[in-house]
View 1 (cartoon, rainbow, N blue to C red):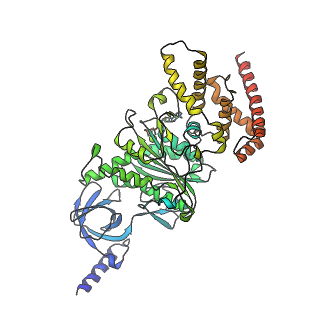
View 2 (view 1 turned 90 degrees about the horizontal axis):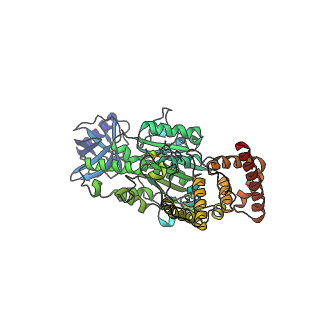
View 3 (view 1 turned 90 degrees about the vertical axis):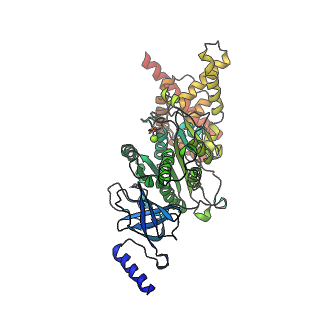
Length: 510
Ligand code: ATP
Ligand code: MG
């Protein structure tokens, strides 16, 4: 009798829902007992596990998020769900996963993997679990190769390695997203797959980012996982985990992946929203007490991996927003301690025209020069010191103090360096040009160039070098250091160019 009833139920379910993945022994049917904003409660599915997908009625799907007494807490995965109290809930026995594969490159999908770019279904057969335990220490290798951001101040003073987690931190509108976009643009021809994760962004912001990246041909190697501000908190919460799952797919194929999370402040807010809706007790600043665990388990999934698990790497650039430049708030301090360094953007620098507005003194890369090419190591020595001495001495000039020759010299060098590090967004600088400019800085070749024309100088020098000395560029890049011979030839080219440039400046003023 019991068996008959059971079979009858199974037939019922199969006829009602086609999506339902039936696994005999897992079969459980419950019903919805509570409806909240994008969350529901259910009973009767006691054996389900956290992260399992459940089918609700015929149309909706949910994700097991927690337990409260007899009730199972479920977050809804649909944006326009019409779930009612009493609707049946079925277990699927499957953990939530996202489609993964090359078919996602150049595509925009929501955090459950549904395409939202209007370009038809995804062509991919594989899936990856959204939540996964990060690889262990034994499955990792030290970070040793650099990822070139094309941002001069980063590549020379705050170098990022493949597999590193570097936090981008700063107030609103200080150029945080621009750092991510420039880095993605700079991965063209670098054989790195990029994943842009938008968390609770405005649709207009996302479309302008996609537009910019497509102009630079970055869609050939970039995927977008997008959750918008108006999406339910469940989708906003899932976005970075989905991105991470996709990154893992590529890393397992031995690829280098760059994943950017824009931004984790909004992720923390979405998680807080979900948790408060589920009546979990709030802790510091009303965030749930496991918020640190949330972000640490996400960022743990980045790294440089051993060959036993594919040998790829996942470099993560999470963004976090501060208020009034205060980095001691709860979420920023959490993330600072989870990541391997931070790039700190300052409103004041941004407003005074120092862009990218990176405060080098407060920024750090804990991987350091082991994530730099040999060439960059050679030419970036002493830059941080020059810059910090300049900032210290600059305060004296504000009091109108009389300055000695040495101080004046340091100030002049500092001004030159600050100017040298300025760079418009969407214009990453190739490594060789960075190296040449820094070489010129160290050897006092730029001392007589008008600071306002430095950018123009760099552009022209690069064009000339590419035209007149392509072999030299190639040889330097291949050797990855300035040998005596290469240095002499390079210097000769530079001096020649500098003289011509100075001459043309004088002619213009006459
Ligand atoms: P939000 O807090 O709104 O997300 P954000 O910190 O991500 O802002 P961006 O959107 O990257 O900042 O940049 C803010 C503005 O500053 C944009 O208009 C961008 O074009 C400009 N900007 C960013 N970097 C530079 C730069 N290096 N040079 C000139 N302008 C820049
Ligand atoms: Mg931004």
